[in-house]
Length: 358
Image 1 (cartoon, rainbow, N blue to C red):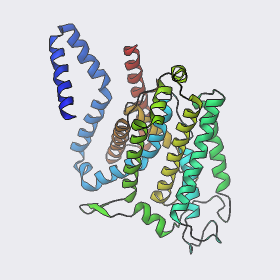
Image 2 (image 1 turned 180 degrees about the horizontal axis):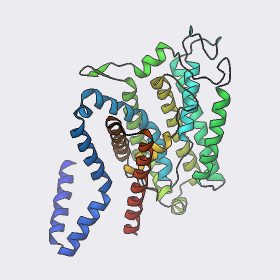
Image 3 (image 1 turned 90 degrees about the vertical axis):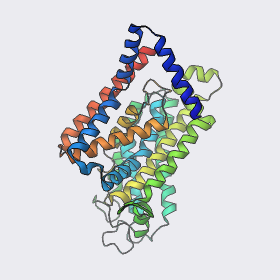
């Protein structure tokens, strides 16, 4: 495989050498434009590292790795929706709902403010299955409305975002909670997510990092080695052509959104223990980070384009930037502005690539 990559590189270099001066300039310009965002982010990372040497310390790197791992499942879910030329605005609220449900069912038995005082401590894996199922149902509803009613995912998920938020607010009033934050989690739950069996120096690597890596490996297999993955890219590229080729477009769309919802459930279960205190604001704007990461990683809104490694790169780069901005004491409000600019620039570059290919 490595030999093939090297052969392609040298062949491309040889072809470049045969081009005229104008063609070379155009190729260099296209390369700079297509990779401008990556270059900018790398320059920013280097500048932050020089300004704040602790930015590259072991504890900081583990923090970046942990934050990236926590956000990776939701990004992988939204990436599937983007490949279908859509998006999912309900993802953050789905994470919030599943986090609160998971946390409420896994509070410590002796906790004074237990939401359901008479509820015994449930098995962790049973709650995992429940919250993943809740997320999958949310995703299935999004996919069904998109496919059956021919509605744009933006409209569908905007509506379900509000519905989920309302359901979350109602859920938080159940039992003895009265809308308060859900905390006092059981030791088994927190140990399962935040515990560690491996450390880098004196800094422990949380267990959820390994869960996220495993989920990413499974998603890579699904995207690249299954008929479902091939159908997803076919529908994203051209739904009419996919239908003519025998692909069940409706079923594919529903399955993509259902899988995305299940990944939101996983993210919610991780966040429930990682945060430790869950409220109505849990999951707020998570979808924006995920969309930004996908676009930075090359998942195109024109449909049918995206790679798992691109999503990983986008999540990690975006997290490095925001951890770096925190190191530089940049105001949280300004970080929202920067995040918006990154999304805008990444989408503009992506659209330019599409127009050039046409």
